[in-house]
Length: 158
Image 1 (cartoon, rainbow, N blue to C red):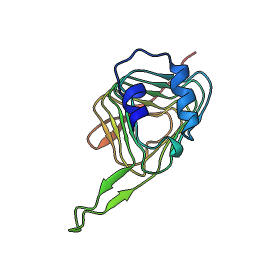
Image 2: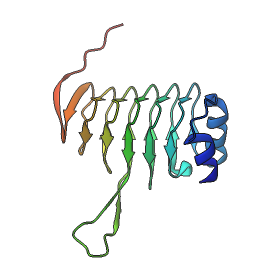
Image 3: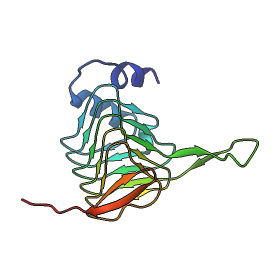
Image 4: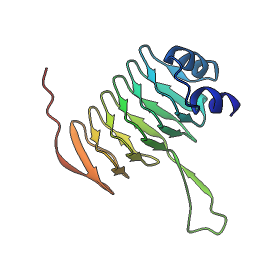
């Protein structure tokens, strides 16, 4: 928690390489060319896998109570949230419910968008700004809204 609050959550403009080194030290699997901006919160690094050439924007929150996988060439824009946990409002004990999150290659999570527990975002899916993914996102598709719905196909050009 101390390391997180000083190195990751602080507003210091540190290069990504020491952050990547620390994540690996705490058990995360992190690929090459990963960019981690200031004020990023990562709950449990030992349950995190980050692929190659991933961009994690300022104020991203990875609340990973269980396995969280971010594939190669993914982008988590400013303020995006990956939430692996929620509470069971049907029980008086408010038990924690967790679900794994998988972002496949090329996924883009827009600014202030939320990926909920148990959601997989398939290859090159896009979750647009302020949207909430409560179920699987199909590959090469663009989603918007709360809950997010598919609005069109993602067409990629060289």
